[in-house]
Image (cartoon, rainbow, N blue to C red; front, side, top):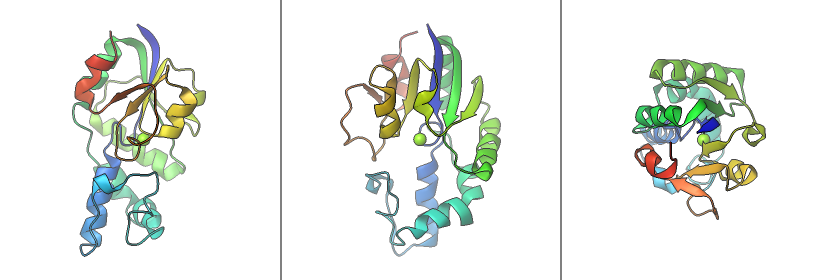
Length: 178
Ligand SMILES: [Mg+2]
């Protein structure tokens, strides 16, 4: 039984990059990108509009991006499993603006997720959790392989990592024992 399990939101719970690719390709149909093209933390590296992709997604289209992204598959079942394995499951997320925090809270509240709260924090690894499930390699590296579980995404699967990894919420029972 764990005390506190932290779960990242974007691209672990919410399929933000799936929606980002969809928005990109609707607006730039002659230069489509694929989710599997995003093999680093840099979206500018894969988009034909380069660094303008950040304004396109996080300013011009931020409401659609944040509110209309779907849950990752089996999130509800996965979080229910974690709740049975711990005293508290908290969603943790780094959202750099108040607008993105507010939109994230609106999205979370619509999903009906079985969690104990949401914490916004830039340096998530500083929180006193027993485990964190995250897709950001930098956060995992700072949390350490004993506390981090990597949620595999195209941008992290080439990174060195000696801790556990999961590809889908359907795998959670094989990764964490109740
Ligand atoms: Mg994330």
